[in-house]
Length: 336
Image (cartoon, rainbow, N blue to C red; front, side, top):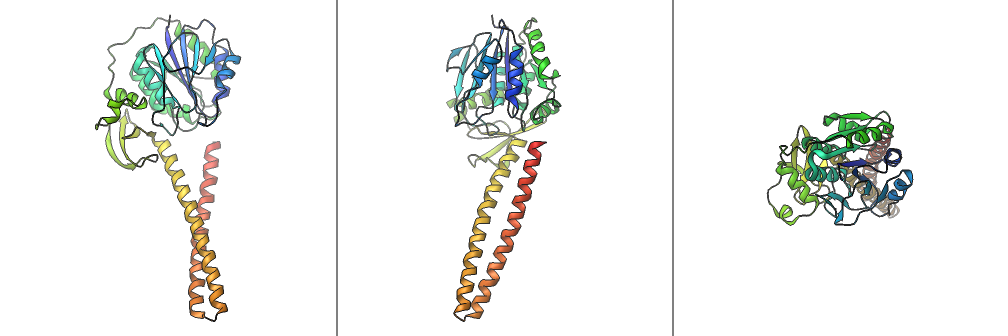
């Protein structure tokens, strides 16, 4: 019998936390466990093998339409959202959320839609804030929220974001999360059917699954913003959910504030590198033309080329310095 649905999200530093967590879960766990770990879309995932060896539960990449069974760990495969439906699992190539596919928010949100108060959401180590909006959806549907102690996490940003934006039920070191899960799954729980399923939650879940009705619907949750989607260039709609600000475009790409800022910074960096290359090439060409004009005795033209080369070099120097300062700042923040 399926007593509970446990959904776990992790990113940087998450493999170690997941390995320790599942090592303490019993073989007769009356719950199904779903895991999303941010991984490269181009590489195969060995996470099921790692988790299967770590504990007594078998971990697999599920197949579309697979029936949910207790005592099993279902791991999102690379480049696919893991979708929880009533009784079955689906995989989706839907729009990226927070620049990830699989995304933690998609797993959490669809589980909350299908199983409301039976869901236990767990956020582990990771950068930025994927999982926060999904954990909020779990709480709104009557589920339970557990977060790894940020002081223990290798990367504390994801746990801290969840704690700051969601009324979390438990903040625990990984060694205590498994014991808490074992206790919770063996406690009786009443399905809280009175908790309404919001239209926004329904639409966002459908968009992750590329449901035609949701994708073709002109209505979008939230209000139009002044920002463009970094992935497709479309208008981003701003969603304000319990003071948690998020953005989603017409085609379904979704961003938290932090993930949108990260995408904008990446786009700006690419533009600056392009500008730097163009300025350095311009300076080199005008320097060459200066030398040629000087050799030909065209002093007036030579001076113009010389001044233009100097200006381009100065502009390139400013951009290069900005890039170096930006890269150093990004590296330091990533290690924090």
